[in-house]
Image 1: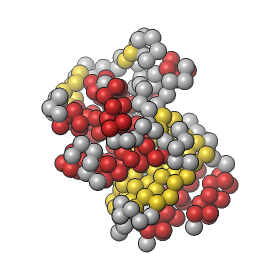
Image 2: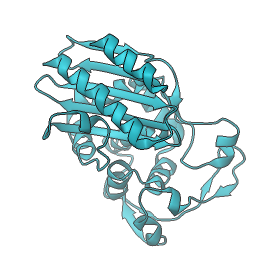
Image 3: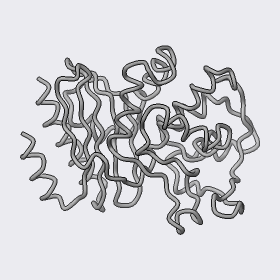
Length: 266
């Protein structure tokens, strides 16, 4: 089974990292699991965890509000930049500039429809250093959260959010086991991740009706999916891909890898 996956990945021409482990600890498979990839929107999982961490510490409440604005500061020089609605997966929030939304509403948009504007507002509220500290506390140092989304000056200078498959799997496992903040917060995070609307990757490789709590990430030639899969033997699966131009092709590869790993749990 595993050689079949590896030969299929070679045939695709893509660079692929995989971290797979059943929650009963009996099955595990890693491929290039410590190789850094551009994190794309998978770093939003770290933002989600830090939000609930700060709520647990009573530094904020989920029903606190933020004024919606589209102006942020570059990591490089502090200069102002704005997000382009046409580059975002969600547009309604841009029409709400000047009004308010709760932290809970912004979190829902960040995860389920991967809103970049919601993400940047939350990152600014929580603090990049706090988000990275939370990643470190969960022993997921292979993820580096340096900045908000669409900071083109930082991108041009190579300051990118990165992750390894192992690091992302550790975050998802912490949520799955109720250890990301505490059991109640982990349950709430799982519920949001289950409402994910982009389901062409890992969910497409599973039997219909299988519950999945997951977060995708996609930019040019990069597509990722990180999931808790509620199979008869539940498992965490992270698949990172780089080098395929057609998103349908990379989604298909992720789904096929998922199908074969799911079969290994039966």
